[in-house]
Length: 353
Image (cartoon, rainbow, N blue to C red; front, side, top):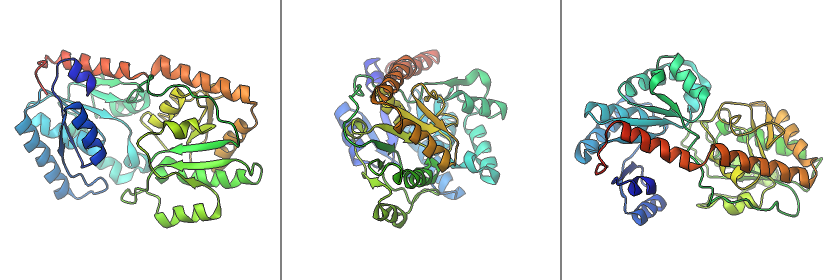
């Protein structure tokens, strides 16, 4: 938002209600328009109403361009924008449950993407494997598909922090979803507790029981009661929690480009993640962290054990390598530059929204 304003654009945000986000946008002088999105729903009538709502808002705003991310804003917002002759620039920040589970849902979502992206001048992906998948399936043309370095990281906001003293702590940051590998994290914590009773295993993130793969509250409470993990709830500032961690862990089944790993790497933390699209773009095995097999708690525990067996100076070297990688490849300046370039390429007026 700040970069768009500095370049002379006005900006408006269409998003579900969120008091904290409302306040941040007010501070920037950005209009934030609420919209209700049923994230888990597959009701075609509900989705049709959403598309019509996007069309109504965009017809009223008449923006010079529509920038979006996440599945329903990407599909239905892009479709609405195209119907009004507004160039759309969707950002595929991850493929989600539909592509992880496959089947009829994947077939349906693939067709919706194909329709929604048909007239988009550019479609952004956060890793090359997602881009290849969409191009190979004919969802988007190769000449319109671009790879971005995730959402980018503010390297002045996420600064390196010294490794903390005391017992080692493994931190998971994200929504508590099965697709994020939360079950494998808990199982690995159980396996390591006997060998390293001083080690701590922490979940930083909220429940999302409305999600099809969301962890249930009773399940979380049982893990806490048995002493397997600590739950740190949610926060608007992850930096103190990353600074207090020895390593950040993300055993996800698939990612676009995980922001939690980028922010942790920027703060000089070793990274442990699954060897899947998105995660392996950030983690160089044995250099800035370790990769493990997907859906495999034993492999995850082995990776965490390897890190525990490193000397402090080796852990520090891994964290320094993580920071260097983020500096070289994932600064938010790269993302801003790309967006401004594509907006200029379609002759968007600097007075547009």
